[in-house]
Image 1: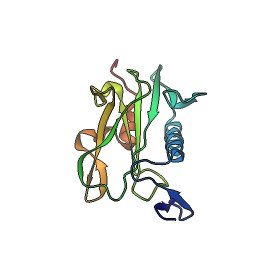
Image 2: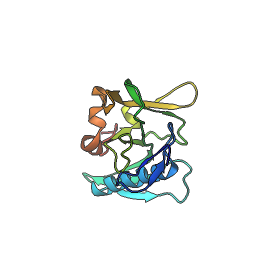
Image 3: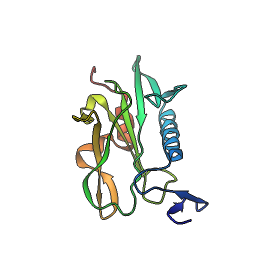
Image 4: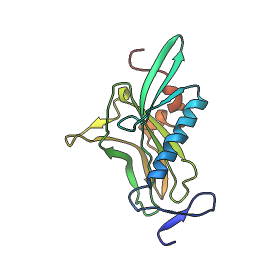
Length: 172
């Protein structure tokens, strides 16, 4: 199939638009992230309608219940992406909350079986910036020689460190 890529298991073709992943990949990203959070002891509450947050998470840490709304936005770079000092999300968020977390699974071009990295950016970190066009932006990654990696100032928000960081908030 022209324009498609293998599905990561070597089976079937996925029709991958150059600039946007198919909606099924976003569902996969949401469920993949929910699995990571559940493995880390978070309770996941799925909404009955996707009108804002993808789900809500809670966890009791040191006798205190932490509740965070979650939005998941996957990054699906193509192998034609040029080197970039900053790479990430610049879009309208359907809802924003001071305790929310924007979780960004970052996939490798043509290998969509599982993300290479996952960034967990909390609202209270100050890294999610609202611009004048009512869009939110955060650029936690960079691309060099076709390799996607965390930016130095964002490393604490990635993978295991980022997941653990969700257990604290600005009121601590």
